Amino acid sequence: MDEPLFVKGGTVKGEVAIAIPPGTLAAECDRVIAKSLANILTDAANKLGVVLAAPSNKYARPLPGKNAEGKTRYEISGRVEGGALLPAFNQPQTKKRGRKER
Image (tube, rainbow, N blue to C red; front, top):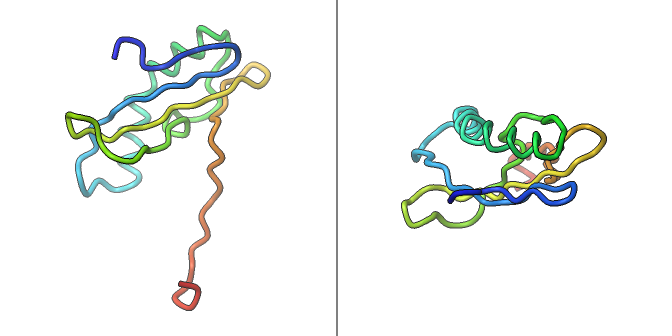
């Protein structure tokens, strides 16, 4: 993929595939995603004349399935508000459920 993100108006959209080994802990997975997306999101923000408002991994949401190389697919989305590029996904905190609530 030459240009994984499309910058148009005040939005950034795209899809990337990142190698995440099976059994990777969530915190390490977030670090791998953030490292993989840092440069392309910074470039997209620069094209829009804004700065990133959150860590790079917050702009990514996993997609079902894997690509042909077995990498995990992620949808990337952001929107400009003021002078910042914000993640376009609503990522509310998940409530931990007790045994009786399952």
